[in-house]
Amino acid sequence: MSVGELILFGIIKFIAIVFGWVMLVATVLTLMERKQSAFMQNRVGPNRAFVFGKKFPLSAFIGHLLSDALKVLVKEDFEPPRANKWLHLLGPGIAVIPAWLLWVVIPFGPGPMPGAEGDHPFLIANLNVGVLFMFAVMSLSVYGATLGAWASNSAYSLLGGLRTAAQMISYEVTLGLNLVGVFMIFGSTRLNDIIWGQGQSAWGIFLQPVGFVLFLVASIAETKRAPFDLPEAESELAAGYFTEYSSMRFAVYSLGEFIGIVAVAAVAVCCFLGGWQIPWVETPVDASGVPIYGWLTVAQIAIFLFKMVIFIWLQMQIRWTLPRFRYDQLMKLGWLYLLPLSLLNLVVTAIIMYAVR
Image (cartoon, one colour):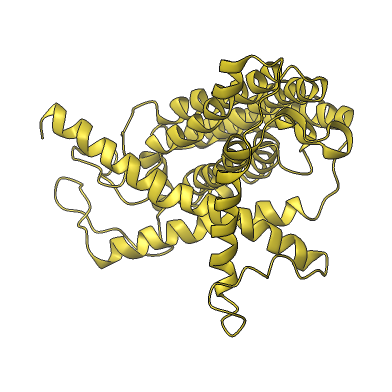
C-alpha cells in the first residue's frame, strides 16, 4: 500500500473505532451509571422514556438515550458574560480529543508477532513508542479542564480546574510507573508486543499484581471518578471545573469522562489482562509470523471487548461503593503512599528480573 492509502485506511479505522465503538459505549454508560447507582441505592432509576409503550420495558433504554441527546442539543448554550469566549469554547474539545487519540495505539485484535513484518488490521498506528505515546496523550487532557475552568471566570470553576491540575499531576506519575514495570518484563513499548508476551508467559496481572492494583487506583483518579472526583465535588464547588457550561459543551465534558473510562479499561486489558489473548488458546500464524485470520479472530476481538466491559463495570462499582476523599487525603494518598509503593514495585521487579536472567 502507498503512503496515501495507509493514511486513508488509518483515518477510516480511527473513525470506525472512535465513533463506531468508543463514543457508542460512552453514550450507553451515561445511562448505565444512573441505572447502576439506582440499583445499589435501592431506587428505580430512569425508566419512563418508553418508545413503544410499557409493554416493551427495554424500549425505555433507547428512549432515555435519545431523550438525553435531544435535551443537550436543544438546551440553551449559556456563556458567562465575562468569560474568555474562545478558550471557553475550546475547553471541552481539548479535554475529549486526547481520549480519542489514545485509541491510535490500542490493538483490539491480533497483529504480527514481535519482530514479524506485516500490517496490523486491528491497530491504527503500530508505533515503536506506543506506551510513551499513550502517556503523552493522556497528560494533555488536563489542559481542557484547566483552561475551560479558567476561561469561565468563576471562582468555583477555577478551584475545580486547580484541583484537576494538581490531581492529575499527582496520579499521572503513579500511573506511568506501574506501566513501566510491564514493559520492563516484556521488553517492548508496543502494546501489540506486550500482548503477545502475555500469551507466551503469563498475564500482566499475575506478573505485576501490585502494579495492577496501583494502576487501578491511579486510573480512577486520572479519570476524576469517585472517590477521587474532587475537581467536580458538587457539595463544595457546585459542579467544579464545568460549573459554567451547559448544553453540548457540558455534554462533551461529561462524555470525555466516560470515554476516559473506556480508554483506561482498554489500556488495563492490553497491559494486565492479556489483551485479545484467550487463555490456553494459541493464535495460529503463518511462516512469517503474521496471524491467520478466521473465526478465532472474531472470538479474540469479542474476548477483548468482554474484558473491557468487566473492567468498566469494576470502575463503576467502585464509584458507587466508596465515599469521596477529602482533598488533603487525596494528595496524601498519591504522594506519600502510591508513589513510594510504585517505585518499590519497580525496584523489586528489576531485582527479580536480574536474579532470574
